[in-house]
Each structure stands twice: as structure tokens, then as C-alpha cells.
Amino acid sequence: MKFDRITLTPSVMGGKPCIRGMRVTVGMILGLLASRVSREQILAEYPYLEDADIDAALEYAAWRVEEREDALVESVP
Image (cartoon, rainbow, N blue to C red):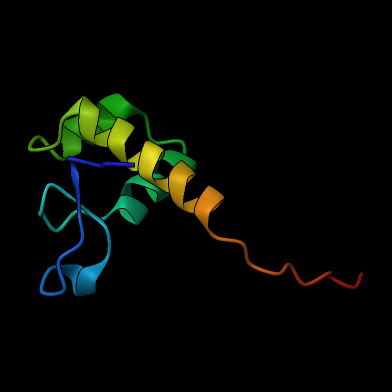
């Protein structure tokens, strides 16, 4: 799968997946969305981002989850 808006550069944010080479990580976007920050709020707070960047972050995260399997540890109540 090709992600035009997601970059992985060792010298930028330690090689974490970023939006278009900027110091905005996919994880940051996901964290904001998970905290119920709206797309509109994200775009207002980070005016250099585009709506398509948020879509790309979600698509990349979904792809990564499907590509990697981690063993889950059963929690004991």
C-alpha cells in the first residue's frame, strides 16, 4: 500500500510516521481524535494540516494494525 502523505524519516521525530515530513506524527493525530477532538478543531489548531492528512493518518494506522500481530496478555481481575 502506498501512503503519499505519510513519511518515515530517521531525522524527523525519531523516524515515527509523520504527516508530509512535518513534525506532526500519525500518533498525535490519532491521540487527538481518540480524545474526541474534532477534525475541525485539529485543522484550526494546526492550520498547515489538511483534511486529507487526517484521512491518511487513519488509513495508515488501520493498515499497520492489520499488518502486525502482538500477543495479548490476558488481564487477571
